[in-house]
Amino acid sequence: MSNAMINTVTIDKADIPNGGMKSYKQDDDSIILITRDDNEFSAFDGKCPHAGADLGEGMRCGDRVICPWHHGSFDSRDGTLLEPVAMRGLTQYELTDEGDSLTINTAAKMDKRVENDKLTDTHTIIVGGGGAGFMTANQLRHTGYGGKITIISKDDKAPYNRPLLSKAFLAGKMDEKYLMLGGAEWASKNNIDLRLKQTVSEVLPNECTIVVTNENGDSEQQTADFLVVATGAEPKIPPFKGADLDGVYTLRSMDDAKAIKGATDNKNVVIVGTGFIGMEAASALAQVGETKSITVVARGARVMANIVSETVSNALVKLHEEKGIKFAFGAGVDQINGDGKVSGVTLSDGSSIDADVVILGTGVAPRTELLNEVNDPDGVQVDDHLQLRDGVYALGDIAKATNQMGRMRIEHWRVALQHGIVTAAAILNEDNVNSLEERIPFFWTAQYGNSLRYSGHAATPDHNILFGSPDTLDYIEYYFDDEGENTRASAASSLGRDKELIAFSELLRRGHAPTRAQINAGFDIIEQAKVLSR
Image (tube, rainbow, N blue to C red; front, side):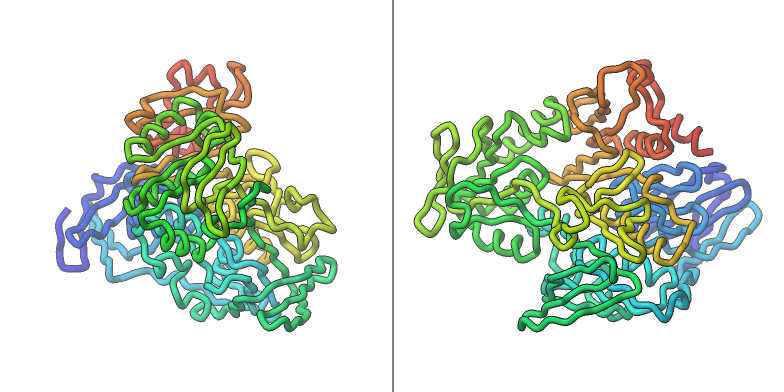
């Protein structure tokens, strides 16, 4: 490869495997990705638009280019977004076939803008400014919807990336402006009426109508052609004494994260809960290094107990303890002590811990109250297109929807974004977008710069097969619903084995997850994923 001039790169065709891809890092830190199918070549910006991963380090499975970090997927021929957590497709460059070589002009980007000429006389109202609501609006605008879009949000901020609050923002590694979804001017650039600090007090699904109350208490009724309810979830606050004291926090919003950052300097911090929020908050605060102490309280005997095996859990505890985190296992919180302000925590075994700040990572509950009259509080029962009634959709954390793994309610970022893509396609009556039944859940947790990734869904992590060493942060673990030899894996988690997890995800998505017997027999999961994708 050689640079012909500042924006032009020449690449030998023989370097690119047929049916494969290859990335080329440039001196200016940019990356060019080339895909090949026989004599058809395509050139793209090779950095994933989500977090900048080198896509060449991922995998190509059939017509899918899959990011190694967070499994965003793109069409290998035109860069179209197929699967979040990325929120847009790949920038495609013009290339010239020179016989034995290709010349790519990175200054000549292919224009993929679409005309917003569909359903121009309609109005879509979206209730909720989280990931699901944002993705619905964003996808509508980028796939041709020309009608009016209104987003109504209780928040005082434009849509932002909530998962990064406990991962990067709380750790002081990301400025607030980089959390804004689509950028600070996203709504105005996309002709979206973003109405903040307004509350939807009533939803009338049969009439496709809502009642909105603003911060002054004034109410109005609005009717839409399409109504999208994506109200998200809210933190569960346990009913123990002292939960309302000054110094007790939950971590769900940007304001929550800012308050915690401002309250923990040289303070004794107790974190209640060992799920994602609890473990990520401990990691973030430890990385800042300004607390006096951090203690994590767990009613059970291990961390992330419903997600990973005891062996992986122990490795995570070791990682945290090496950073100075203390754990109190086997006893829940009996009460939070203090006179107006937190002074300590008493556990159910009678022991106590000094505390100036208590962070509750005790789970969330879906905000389904607006739809309680038509659905179970555990989740809104919707069809394969997230539809509750004709023209009325419920998605994100509140939706009990069907995916490749069955009908379930899942509180993960990628699932919310998937719902937005599917809902936009349903509104536009597009049939070229994968349905929910063709998609699988995926999430990740970042702790001390290490990303544990999980694909699929398992009822328990206790029926497992583990390869590698969690203690050295290099493993992959497969999960099964039982101990049967012919039972197929329903999920996997990994640290450091990205391609294996991608391959598993593709097999799972296609309905060909390996059985326990196959995995024990040395099943080559990467090769099998490539074979099935040809």
